[in-house]
Length: 201
Image 1 (cartoon, rainbow, N blue to C red):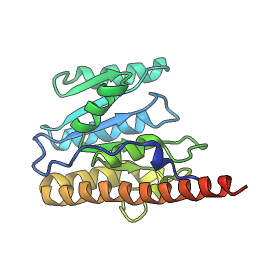
Image 2 (cartoon, helix red, strand yellow):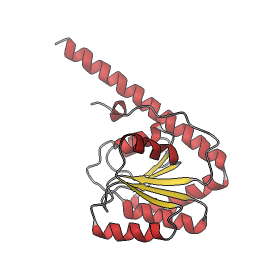
Image 3 (cartoon, helix red, strand yellow):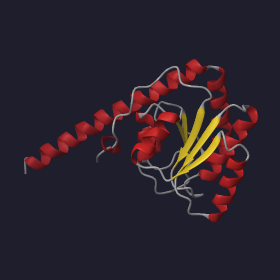
């Protein structure tokens, strides 16, 4: 068994004096199964409590109903709320560099170890996710994995705490990056052991 962290490049250094306002993001296929409706609800709720946040949504639209919800969200404040569409390469890297908090409230029952989560962690994004597939292991010890029914309330509570106490967000970002590095080392060890086993045959 190989850990997916080996498939993700190391991110850039974490900047502790992150710009204001904070940016909350979502990246993935914009479908109900991938949790974009829950992500938008979380963004909408926190924006009602703190008006100076920015929001970035990235990914392809494949659902007309989701499109309506997304358009309604963005149109309320197109300066602070943006849909970037599909992002790849340098555009994806720029997304992660701009985002402080990454929402991943998936409901996809066949989740494994989402690369999006590792990419977020690698770039010092705090990832707030739901416990499907291997996600609890990816986020073990970070206290940012919530059951679907509690996702909105706990995510909003945590984001509000980070807004009020930026030093806690900085600590969470460093912990996220450290988590990725630990998983990457495990993955590299697993890959080395696999290569040794194959070469010994």
